[in-house]
Image (cartoon, rainbow, N blue to C red; front, side, top):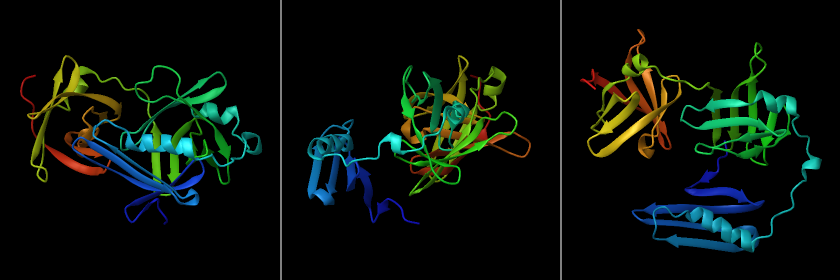
Length: 268
């Protein structure tokens, strides 16, 4: 199947124009090089700041130099009506820790990103074929709906690189006795690294001798987010008896990296 990552070069579009580029980074440096072949335009960004958004800057330059291609107006599209959009309202989590927070406000559907206390990105869904919808001129979506509650239970994003699934998840509040079950030391032979999970002031804390303590936030059944980018999403694994035997690291370019539980936690 054709994908957007072609021989180490990203193939995409920006404002309707074909865009071919790739970024790079090391230590405190960030770069991005891109070209728009239809306009014979090339843009290269260099920076010596690790937090610098080189891709974003390249697209800002492109915004100044490229006239956007004409797009079909919304009036030419058949948009999903409010009865469907309201079914989507809720909280969804992906296996890699991605989250959707969809809310209905003033007759519109919004997705609020983590950390946002208000507003969000409006979702406009154009009706396509076979129960498929296009989101804001971007990816295609499909939904699964519960027959009992008539609400959407699963959202599937379809893009050239594959599929991403988000399942509806209510907000979970861990009780202290539930949190204790996750406490322990976890070890991975490949990385030769050990992490400890402990309960502190009612919170689950991830510890490593090299890094500062990190609070784990529950986002789904046995699934937690972590502020450390290299351990951003943890999925705890249970054995046949329901006892936690380890956790997986899933996120970014890491998938199913298993840390086995080695021993019960000491006093905490």
